[in-house]
Each structure stands twice: as structure tokens, then as C-alpha cells.
Image (cartoon, rainbow, N blue to C red; front, side, top):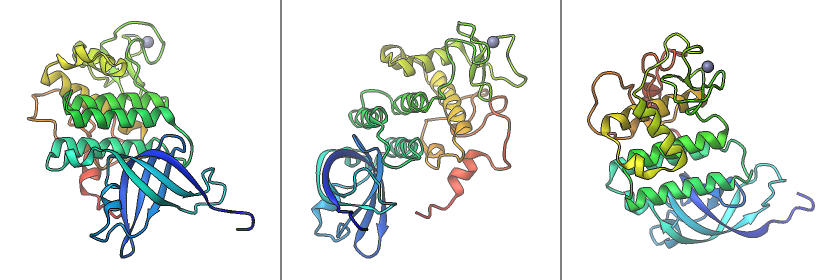
Length: 291
Ligand SMILES: [Zn+2]
């Protein structure tokens, strides 16, 4: 520890996850505006008298004073939260609202998975995540649209957004009808691999609208199109993540639609070839949450 002094620094952050630590402390996983994702200890917050603790619940936007080395040059030593002020505690608005709570959980889990390296600044993902939680809280758009827009833009942040306006394989421009997750999105007739899905053209159009932020178009779409869009987005996301999201299969997307729509979080026939014995949905629902 020679030469290492803990510094105090401020940042604002979204609370992604909260874990117990010992009798009265918590470890808070944060996506900060300037310091990327990091984990920090909040001391004493599980005591019933702690106002501090109520501000550090999942999905809140908080202003923090932290102690630690902001550049993270000293191993994995945890930072400590010394002050917390709530800016917008969105989590309170999702209590008792299962669809919005599970969508917020899927957003937070995705944010964590898209930032595998701690303390690597990712301002764009921070802004996307905060914007999605704010949109969920205000209820300005349907919950599933907000979630799918976030997942599509998150995939673009990660560099593997599905191709929608050109063939994923040869790059020929146009709205192609076939869609293949392993090929990388929409594919032209020449490049279409066996087993490619054939979603409704309106579904590809909805995916494009959510990617570019065309909410006028997205808000006017029908339930069946939204469900097909959710299935393709979930399949594309889970193909690229090494492990399935735990929370995505729990998202409430309303009554089942007929026929061709893959289950949310699951790999539908023709969309993704099976890679493992258990599907993502099974892995997500049944795995015990140990952290
Ligand atoms: Zn092609």
C-alpha cells in the first residue's frame, strides 16, 4: 500500500445491484457517469435508522461521494460510499409494478453485462441506462418498447447491433425479409442461411424505429409486432452474451401471441440454432441467485 492514499471524489450514478455484506453493510454495484461501473461498500445501511440506505436501492439515480482510488490502480480494493443523495429514486416507482420492475431489472443486468471491465468510463451507456429508467418511471411509452429500445441501443454500444437496413452478410442496402441471429440480423435472399426466420416487415421496421428513436412509429405499433420484435431482440442479445440474462425471461409481455413468435428470452425455432441443452429461459428462471 506504499504511496497509496484513498481519495475522496464525487460522481453521479445509477444503482444497478445491491448485495448484503455482513450484518449491516451492503455492496452497491454502480454505473457512474465518469468512472464506469464500479462496486462500493455502504457501511451501516441495513440498520433500520439509515436514511442513507434508502437512497441506495436498485434503479435510483444518485449523487455520491466515494472514497478510493478513482483510477483503480490498486487492485480490486472496494471503494466506500461516504455520502449519497437521491437525484431520482426510480426504484420506488416500480415497487408493486411487476412488469416495470422486471424490465428495470433486465436493464440493470444488461448494463452490468455490457461493462465487463470495472472503472472503464462509458458515458454513452450511462446516459442510455439513465434515460431508459427515467422513461420507464414516467410511463411515457409501453414498458416492453422502452426495454427493447434499450437492449437494441446497448447492443449498438457493444458493437453487435443487428443489421436492419442492409444485409448482415454482404451489405446490400435495403429492408430484407429474412432474419438470422447467427448471421447478424436481416439477410438478403442470396445470403439467407437455412433456418432463417421470416418476421413481418413491420417487425424489422419497429426494430429500426427503436434503434433510431422514432417513438411516433413505435408507439403506434400493434401488440403482435411488439412481441415478435421482443423475441428477435432477446434472441440476438442472448446469442452474443455468453450467459443468458436472469431477468429477461421474467419480463411480463402480456398474453401470448399466436404461432410464429419466439418466447421472450428464449430461442425460437429458426431464429437461433441450439447451442446448449438448456434454453436461456430455463437457465434464467431456475438458476438460484446466489449473490
Ligand atoms: Zn446478402
